Amino acid sequence: MEQALLPLLLIAVLAIPLILGSRRQKKMMQQQQELQNSLTVGDRVMTTSGLYGTVSDISDDATIGIEIAPGVETTWLRQAVREKVGPDVEDDEVTDEVDETTAEVAEPIESDKRN
Figure 1: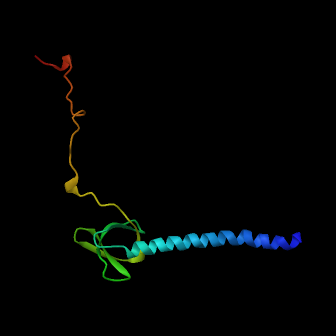
Figure 2: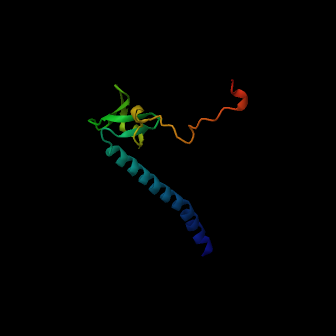
Figure 3: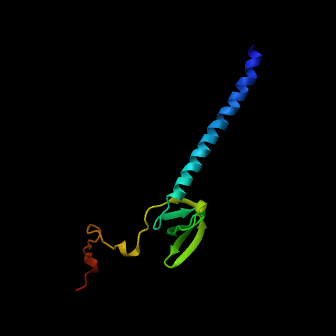
């Protein structure tokens, strides 16, 4: 009786991780497909090769246009989009504000004063 259960137990031990792994892979593929279908013009994205850009053309089912610099558009497979990223900080938005606490001027040392 115990010898008959051993092969079944061995099969279960090997089959359960395979089933769980395939379910996890299916879920990841579904999430990636949803991401690719949800892309719209103006989305900031990162490709699988690490290139950042803005989606500029979604007219084709298989490819998208990504603007990587002003006036420079490249064509990519939709599958190459890895993730959506936050908006890019424009140069106009960056301000050079000085914190008043760090902008204090120190008094000159007595030996530096010249009469």
